[in-house]
Length: 287
Image (cartoon, rainbow, N blue to C red):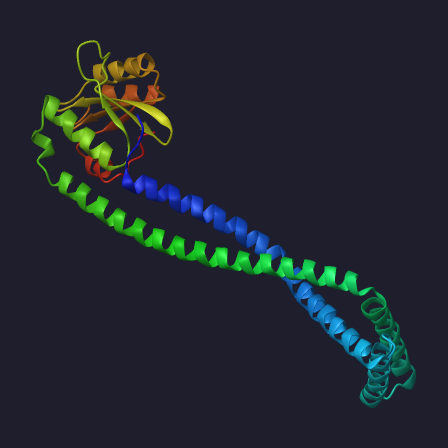
């Protein structure tokens, strides 16, 4: 009994898209810091390649621009820190760290071979391109999620209207096969596949359905008088016969006290005139 409910299909697609979106967002979130580093790294490598090309054209030492830049930055740091703090030794310490860092950066950027820098730039460019593609995928998934959510709300409203129309029918007067057919229509609209088996040898079961992955045996009792515990006994026996996990007795009247007591002991769900509207609107759990 495969479900063909449009609402159920939309709900499944929404769940699938949201799982995919969360996965992409986790991947993106873990790469934000790496993205900033990669962008800065790529900018540095490209500047180094440009400077190396200028040095080559001017026939000057490759390390000279880095040495000059480090020296200027060190002096600027010394003066700035000294003016801000008034502590000459602290300023010298900070300048020393700048000199060491600048020297290492100069050696790495300008001491490495040109091919190594080009390979690094290519790898960083590929990584940033992947992250940009990831951003586009996330935006597309968010747009798709919004469209599916709107479609889902529209389908829910449509389903609610159909169920309200079913509920407005004279269901209290339905008997026999008419009542079974009405219940099958309600269950189908709720997205539960239905198989009508009410006939000789059905072992007390009129409808078989699947709710939340569980097979459910249903006995329909379109009665004017009270339904006794024999209906509960038949539904419970039919549940075992049809290899189901839940049993339900649905009536448009009421149950006797003994039927209610027995249902409570064997775990049989009872739907009657007082909670029938909840059942039709899908607000009564059956599984």
